[in-house]
Image 1 (cartoon, rainbow, N blue to C red):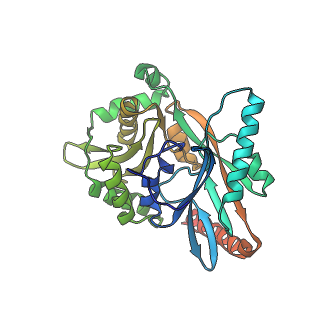
Image 2 (cartoon, one colour; image 1 turned 45 degrees about the vertical axis):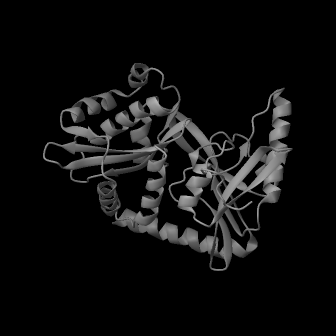
Length: 322
């Protein structure tokens, strides 16, 4: 199946908006596809993927701004063993239908709890974590789950900044550059790509840009969130390095959680494995939620993978010494 989007680009056979055709058209234009398992006219399994070619290698990769991208299996009823049998069968068929690749790297939605069919097909997996607030029905209860320093930060920031719920995209992008410069890192994405994605999200009423601005018009932090009816995600967080002590970022996340309670059912912090970031988002009381990152490399790709690991090791050492 190619990446052609049906109708308005929205389909039901997905775990999240990251798997929607319209999203993939933005983040991987002309470079994505999906395999499907059907029973009659019904889609019972779907696996979207993004593919690129580099140095003679074909890689199935995780697109930018896309937290998860993996298999969806239609829920079934019956005994647990019967449901598990169906899931294994459908996943096995999806794996067999994948196009040829030299490298495969995908992080799957938390809904996938059984990656055994991938293991049996020679894939490997690592576990990553996000944090999720899964019941937004009572915000007082949600707030009581925050650590005390989070509640204190919200109160402090409320006296120092106001939250702009329609913060300009271009201002967010400028602040995003500063965020990476502060860490001595190269911006990992193009602003052209992000503008394209933003236009689609805005047209669908599926995004909000929040900015924390003080009385002098100075931006302390900005947060970009996207959502569908199931989950609201914190997609991009940018902070001004000159203002770190006012709790503005904490206030923005609280505003995002309040927004999520109106437009979705779950708030996902898009958790990070970076220790300081994990420490920050864990304090909001969300449930630590594991998800699998599945990978496989053919013999042809081994030298390239070894070189990639070496480059990353050198980069980490250089940042540590800086």
